[in-house]
Structure formats: C-alpha cells, structure tokens
Image (spheres, rainbow, N blue to C red):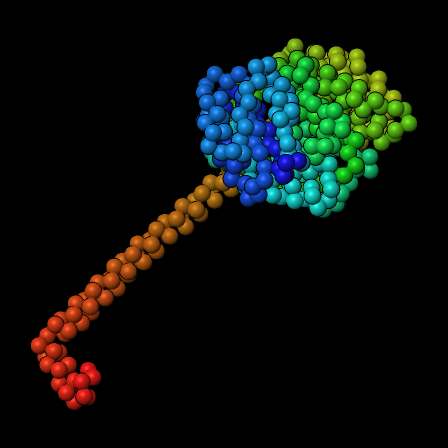
Length: 405
C-alpha cells in the first residue's frame, strides 16, 4: 500500500512530557518505510501543537484531531487514514524498540502472517526498572505459524488483550470489518484483539521484547470504575463470531475467555458498584453458557469456575480478596528480591563507572606526559636545524657529494 510497510497509530490525550519520548522511540526505527498517525483526542496540555510541529518537520508523521471522546474513536480515526500493509498501535506514554517495525514486518512478510505477536515489559520511571511479561507457556508455538482453531490451550494463555503488542495485517482487519467499539469506555482492546485473533489462520508468536509499557500513568482508565465494560466487550465478541454449536474449538476458546475476563476484572474492581455489576453480568449473561460447556473449562480456570457458581456474592468477594492477598504477597516477595538485585546491579555499575573514570584519568595523564615528551623532542630537533653547525654541515655535504645534501 503506497510502499508503506506499517502504519503506527498513536492516540493522544494530554501526552505531557512522555509524548516526545514516545515519538522519538517510534521515529528511530531501523526500517524506514512506515508512517505514524497521531490522533489527538481533546488534549488541553498542548499535545496537539507538539504533534502538528512534528508533522511539519517529518513527512512520515500525520497529525489528526478527533473531537469525539474515547480512545476507540481516536484509534478508529487513525485506521481510516492508515495506508500501511500492517497496523501497529502505540500508546502515547509508552516506548518501543528501534527494531520494532523491521522485526515484526520482516516476520510477517516471511510467514504471510495475519497477526504477529511480540513480547513487552512493564516499566517504572522511579526507580527506573522494567519487568518483562512472562513468556508464553506453550514454547512450541515460537517459531511456528499457527491458527487459533488449532490451539489445544486457551488463547488467553498465548496472547494478552493488548493491541499494542500485536501487528495486524491491514487487509485482514478490513476483511473482518473490524473497528474499535465506540460504545465502550474501556475493554475495547479485549474486543479488537480476540475478534482478530480467533478467526486468524496465520499467527506468528515472537519472543522478542519490543514494547515498553509504562506502569506510571496515573490517568490510566483501567484504574477507574469500568462500569461493567467487560460484560459488553464479551457480548461484542460473541455477536461478531456468530458462534455455532458444532464449532467445539470456538466454544472452548470463548468459554475460557469468559472466565479469564471475569477473573481479572472481578479481581481488579475499583469500586463495590463495579464488582456487583460484573458479578451480576456474569451470572445473567454468561454463567449458563460456561456451565453448558463445563467440560471445556481449562484447568487454569477450574478454581474460579467453581467459585462463581456460588450464589453468595460475599463468598466470591472473600475468595477474590484472599487470592489478591496471596498474589500481593507473592509479588511483594518477588519485588523485594528484584529490588535487591537492582540495588546490587546499580552498585556494580557504580564500581565499574568509578574504575572507568580512574582509568580514563590515568590514560589522560599518560597522554599528557607523552605529548610533553614529544614537544620536547621536537623543540630539540628544531634547535638542531636552526644551529650554525647544522647549516655548516649541510653546506659541507653539498661540496663533498657534488651539490647533493
């Protein structure tokens, strides 16, 4: 498409000081045949001005303004303008590796892929640290091309619902008439990812860590009340896939996707109201479906499936609380160990920097001494050339050698 390998769509709302850092990382790609479509979504901090300034300086950048609120509207506006063979999405407070486009487009072209999934880490600014996402437990999938219908594990164990870690073939997305659901304030990634993933025939999974997700964004929507968006998101997926009873593999995937979604969202509720809305939505719209397909529930979700069958919401809430405490304790210990490791690493780096500084000072001193000796030798040589004895010797040599000094 117009010789453009990839369109990188970046929705922006009050990008702040992270915006320039994000754009610098995107524009520093080792492969140059890409475009960047930045869509400002009602910023009040001057972000649109930054985008327009960059667009004037760099022809690869297009700056758009989308008045309708919501990240789905912004991304859809970018999709309309995209001309690349592949679509990538980046959030304005994150950064990417310079090899992102080269690596994913190269693998996509080599394997004729519909989707290329790559790894990411969660980054913190203070202290500066990054924690890689655990790799896919199905290691056999790396280096192969596979279809979702051929998976013998839930897709939720293979791909997280984050659009910014997937490159989508643009023609494939358009063949599905796939856009972001603009009626959802959150969970729009869930819809887009699994609507694209489940019908896909050619998926490539890369171990490469190519995306850096910022965990310091205080304005993240996922920290607020999602108002039951997960229930609506699953409805979008179900309706789009037009599930039929004889497609066992699809029932298997949807059953486990439902459990994965509610397990995560119930365990990360921001308010009591959100918890009740989600639990009611699960029981009203999905528990019957999951129960009908109980034999398809993966062992990863068996405990949660047993839990949600209880009619007592407090029992569910208490179990979620216990699970959260257990997980929090695990991560506290894990985080403490990594902080110790990080501290030791900083100390080693400090020692090496001090050693390097000392060696540079020693090298500078040695160079200065040698340069001093060289100057002295040159001065002595110049004095010899300027002396009367040297001139007399040269004149005598010309006589002795017939005019040749």
